[in-house]
Structure formats: C-alpha cells, structure tokens
Length: 327
Image (cartoon, rainbow, N blue to C red; front, side, top):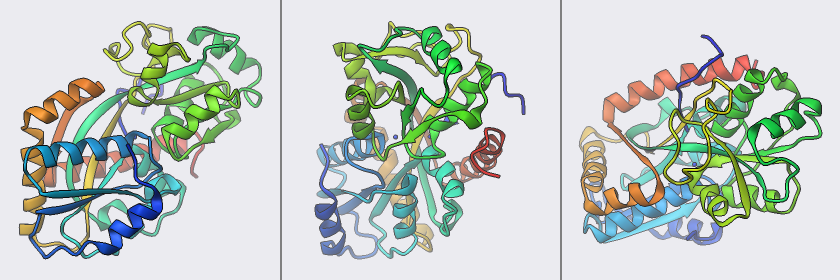
C-alpha cells in the first residue's frame, strides 16, 4: 500500500472513575429494557470518546429514547481495559464508545479481548485531526515545526492519544512524508485530550495531535497555534488552519468513532440497540450536535459496521507495521 497519501477513516462534562464504577455496579437492567442505558467511555474525562458519549447521553434523554442514561469512564491502554470489561458483561443495555485508537491499541497492547469478541452496533461520526503547538512556540506553521522536528526528532516531543491510535498513526505518516524515520519519533501518549492539552500549555511537548473538538477551542482562543488539519478539506471548526496537503505533505487522515456492545447477545437485543442509535441519529438534537462539534455524519450499523471494522483492523495493522509500532 503506497505511503504517499492516505485517505483514511481513523479512530476520540465527565464523571470521575469511582462514580463511573459505582454506576456500573449499581445499575441492574432486565434483558431488552432500554429505559436505562449505560455508555462506557474507555478513556479519561475530557477527550473525544468521553465527549461523544456525553453528547449521546444528552440527545438520547432529551429525545425521550431512554429515561435514564449513565456515562462512566474506564481508563487505560487505549481503551482495551474497557474492551476487556465489555467482554465480561452480561448487560444488554450497555454501549461502549470506541474508534481507531482502540483498533490500533488492541494490537499494540496485545489485548486478549479482540474487537470480534464483542458485538458491533454502529459507526457514528468522523472528525478532523488537528496538529497544534503552544502560542509561544518558536514556529507558527507546519513547515517551521517539521524543520525543527527533522533537525532533532528526539528533542521534539509530540503529545497525542494512546499508543497505536489515530494521533500516533498521523505522526508516523507525517514523519515519513517529511523524510523523518518514524522510529525516531518522540511520541508521548496521553489517555485523554485534557491531559495532552495541559502538557502543551505547560511547555512539556513541542506539538500535539488530537481531534478538532479537543484543540479547536484553544486554537480559536489563541492559546494554541493550529499548524494543520488532516483531512482533504479545511475544518469549519478552525477554518484558518491549512490542510496537510496545502502545507506540502501528501497525507490525509479522518478519525471515526462508533459503539460496541457485549458479546453473546441475542439478535433481538442487538437490533434494539441498533434501532436506539438510529433513532438518536435521526433526531434534530443529533443533527445540531454534529454541527456544533464539527463532526461528519458517518452512520453505519450492524453487519455492515462489522465488515468495516474487519477491514480497518487489517488496514491499521499494516500501517502500524510500516511505521514500526508493531512487528
């Protein structure tokens, strides 16, 4: 697969972990009863998965699709700790948020639970990746950053999400396009966008990579400088930030997020969850959420979503091997 250009579907306000675990332990849902729903965000509060889960919570409740929706966080290992918990669940009224971060993390963390061990429900959204630097960085465009990066890869740390996820894949592809050995990248993974933002603002890293929902407000507010966005077109969230292609680097990446459910559920229970997500998707509240967050509508459900996941696992594994993240 050529490395010059990737049009890639990648894949990204919060209750504390103890509160989430309490919600997990205290909720008893009868099979087929979606009046109460739990949504697991398998990352720390403040990041893309957590934000998307809480938007779902609000839309499902405000649309009257479920009386009570609880969101809880299970942090660690690019989401595979949460994936492992999902693999042990017997609750049909539980959805887990996920995306490419998890697709890659399953391999980089050698997870015993794989994506084909749980039940695919729906792909929901896509989001532009955003490369940023602190406002006081010694460069204010991508060319300047790449020049500094090329001169001293080890001394130019880059913050991003968990190892093997969308952000690190983008860093590797950009390094290749810039003539930098991906093996020399000093990539520092963080469990959520809030943590990487703190590292950027505290001067601990030279640049950061995350979704526009994580860094866009800080770019608009002047705390961060937007160096480039990863998709073919500019993002409405940060319209003044050029694309990677505009900046002279032939790379494209788009982040996606979806939801999974427990293994071994009946076809009827799976269809109930799919219908819930479809009804949420068709609401005016969801359309407004897509616009407000700068998300692309990428709904794909059931078996088609499962086929997409299988293709993504193969594609992601190949890219991770090419940039040296797995053997």
